[in-house]
Amino acid sequence: MAEMLVPPWLEPLLNTAFFSVCRIHGDAARSECNMYCLDCNKDAFCFYCRSTRHNDHQVIQIRRSSYHDVVRVSEIENVLDISGVQTYVINSARVLFLNERPQPKSGKSVSHICEICGRTLLDPFRFCSLGCKLVGIKTNGNARFSLEGNNVGQLAERSRGEGMSSRRLSSSSSSSSSSSRRGEKALLEGSQQQDTFPPAAATAAPPPPQPSARRRKGIPHRAPFKA
Image (cartoon, rainbow, N blue to C red; front, top):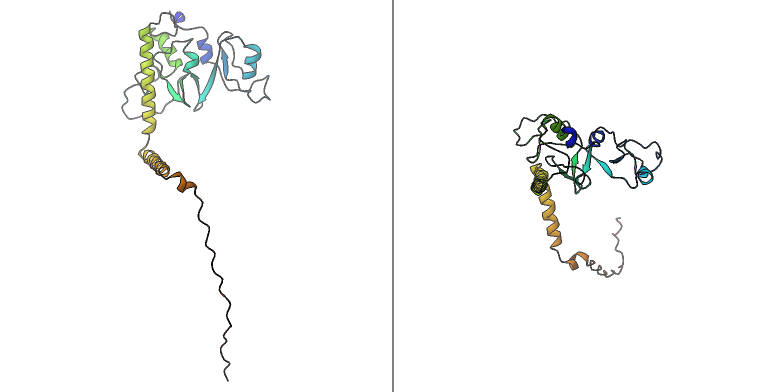
């Protein structure tokens, strides 16, 4: 049952080591192995290997965030059901993590945690990564990666969850510390005050200095000699 819910390339993808130097194009500028072919289902390869060996294949690019592998939602959502997995916005792109990440235990009570590893989540998702969802499928069988049979309601629910994640992530980032908020507010107010100045005053050159009248040198007066 679990094999029917998981594509054959997913587990090899999650177990692949990325960002090593390509053995063929090691001297090239883009020689890091950060791509994976879903058709070949083998090792990672670099940009130049893709153009020569996987030109017509289905390829995804793996990226790094805080030394952990991530993939863009726009690249993976067409081949994999990612519902239930927490997504994040990094560098203006929505991504999700491939595998579980270690997290220090927090004494604070949290509202949402991963069902597998217990990691704190921003929104009411079930899993923190694709790897944890895979474990959940093998353990419980109440989730799936296959896109077959997905209805419109499930896709709409996933879209609402992703929108909530974006809002809460931006809110969490803006409220990380009160001192940073005050600093940002001060910078913002300062920039607004600068913008209120008229452009002419900001760009006008200072008036030239007035020429000073030259004083005529008079006859020097010397003190009389004492007898």
